[in-house]
Length: 312
Image (cartoon, rainbow, N blue to C red; front, top):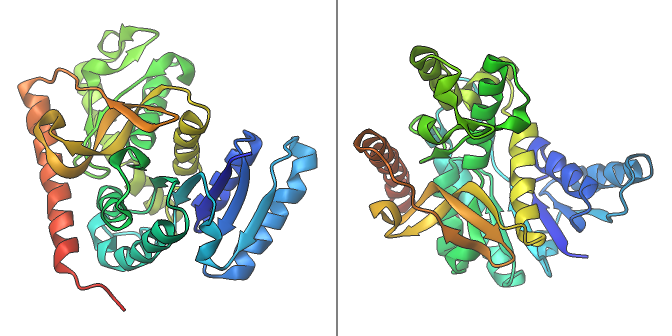
């Protein structure tokens, strides 16, 4: 079976381990600097197998070198957002954590696919890409899947239909400047604008942008974890099972949508080669402007990253 390593055994990491095991995507290794936490949660998850009906092996480790031999790695390690904290506030602290993880992946799992979840998402994925030196096909960020599933949830609730009937697309950076594309959002192929008035749709778009902050405010002491974990595992499944899923992901752009040297949320096909193709949608002038604004915010984060000295 494939080896899936999840770095960070907090709420997101442990939830991702559960979803991956239940889908029997492979054997799962949980890694956390607090060794007992990784080992304890792994053992607990392993013992749930007979009840939930999965045979995946699950183990925990406090040694980052446990990434060795991984086919796919999900990086969730880092500090969560707290009330009043922007994603960019997290940048410097999490950069040092992700830098160490990326170095270990480069040195011990040179053939792995990497999905980053740590915030600020786009910048942390860029950092991972730069340090590992892996091709862009093997380093992607979980952003658009989560943002789109929030958009889909709110649309389904508003209309009163199954979430399975709703398809949505969200581009751009994972944060306040994301770009939910109403024109490309449908209910069983029917444009969502046929169901929801324009003014109400604008409110739903804004709630999607604020989706993470809404949960942070409610939880007070943490951030979302079930939906982010599920989103990362959906991406992992698309790669490990060669599903050829068309999903919005944070990808390194080399001219697509007019951008270079940046990670940004775009629709892409995920399969056995990782990021197999980026789909360039036709955008209106307004949508292009919104995407450019989002890209500029990501570039600011990358500039802050480049300016910050690495902790040693």
